[in-house]
Length: 402
Ligand SMILES: *[C@@H]1O[C@H](CO)[C@@H](O)[C@H](O)[C@H]1NC(C)=O
Image 1 (spheres, rainbow, N blue to C red):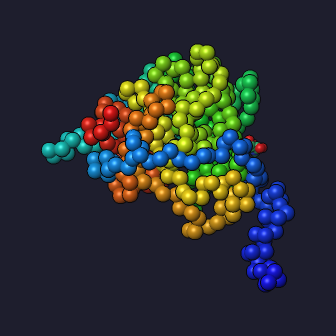
Image 2 (cartoon, rainbow, N blue to C red):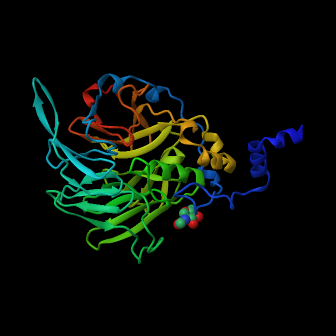
Image 3 (spheres, protein in one colour):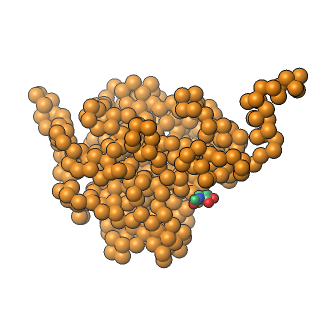
């Protein structure tokens, strides 16, 4: 019987891996080939999800009311939406690095948006993720997972790199490379807080764009808690690490009094608070955890509460992530048969004290799915779309929150 089993090579290899290896000698797929699998610290292993009831109960708000897939023909994979360069326009950055602007216009009897015919500029190659206008300077500040933190000048004529590595006088990780700039917020003094999610670079994929998903998945697989929160100070042009040890740091949003920065820790299904001011300054605590899915973009709403974009729901295999063997097999499983992450449309609103106030759903993802960022402006909630085409919005008059 035992002999019989061993003749099945797959079973034999699996048994061998299980019994003898700590996965030090087996390579992971490109670009994580030189990285190793490590144990995930106990406190990072996610507990069960909050129940989908009360303010988290499924509803049809996005499904029924969202204006979906605008510009889907032209704009592919705009992770975020930035309000600007005017009050009535929005800026999008696609996965190839083209920058697009759409202006509010009246289309017949209805109000809508018209995409300008040509992209305004090109900031590739790279993978723009989070971006936002600096209200004071008018520059568009961009997190590019390949190039670092960028600034695109007013009029889009030029862009330059603000930071692609940490300053030498940073107390933490001086001189280290910024491998995966992801999302940002800008303080009233112009300081930029941004996440560097993980230390595995974004790689070019077969469709010829830099795919941030694959290296994200590999960070989940390695168990590396290499995510950081950085600050860039325009006065000194220095970049410092202000918090580290995140299992993929993602969305970033300042509180309205700028006393803390909320940071999504994607693989832990949690939002942390990195305190800047007050008695807790310099410490990190938890704003909300046990979220039902992977938090991606984060922003502050007009009322001072936070909007969380949930890019995918938990899949049943989440509890297995604590096993190295499972993570190793996941890394080498072809994408066609990899366990699917359900990606309905979901946005969650949470107070600065961590109370869940509302959720907006498209439960089947029929109209909006896999929301990667959320940006509120004048009663309208813009929704980014990392994987698919086009972007969406919701007028908040439809929101049935308390
Ligand atoms: C990436 O981060 C992990 C965990 O923090 C660390 O062990 C590893 O050495 C880092 N790798 C590189 C290339 O920086």
